[in-house]
Image (cartoon, rainbow, N blue to C red; front, side, top):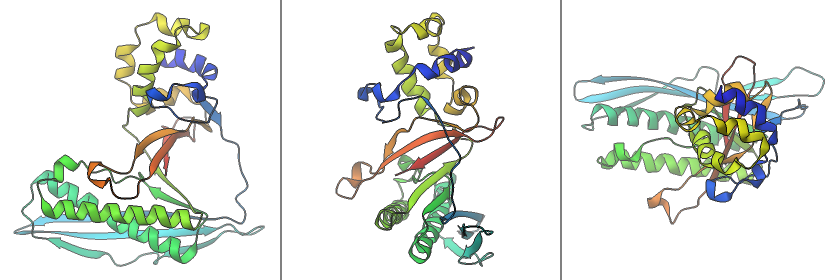
Length: 280
């Protein structure tokens, strides 16, 4: 019921007028924005994804890691030219560690190794092919819980090396005017619903929100992930307004270049969960 009521009032919301103190800062004037088709002829669009196989053996961990980029050059009046980078089926890197890590730390290490390989691939692809757009499978942020790794000097070093690679990619894309974005499928985030839960009481003066505020929405919205709400609120080919997600730096990064990360949710198909699109 809450989602249906919210859907009925979504066109009455102007996010550009939301208080900045609630974490909203956007130029979009509508909660839901229709995404019209666009002509991509002449554009070079790249994507990067990776995979990893890991085994814990006696005294050490071993992983096979591979990342592949693919570039589509949309030639006018012709089929796109497709190129794989470095090749379609590259031989995987073999990586080992003899560090005495617990299970959670090992899982963090595996994630770091995979992201390092993917970002290195993306950096090389941008340098060599200068795409107009490059898409990462997943977030443009290195989502690692620092509390899970800060007891291991080895893991902290690996994590800081990963963040250095991300900064290189951000800066390189800025230099070459390449649009960088990450596409997160099946997001479990509740960042938007949490922001909206704080904002809704302040919308009570608007006539359109009278019905919405008649119900006790607080326990409902606290249990909703962003995609739970937006699956019913957004129509196909609609996106939410763009909003601030996070900044790249952490407390220990204060003397290093920082980047603001923004995002929106996009519903690409009627019965599919909305995707989260992130970009610096």
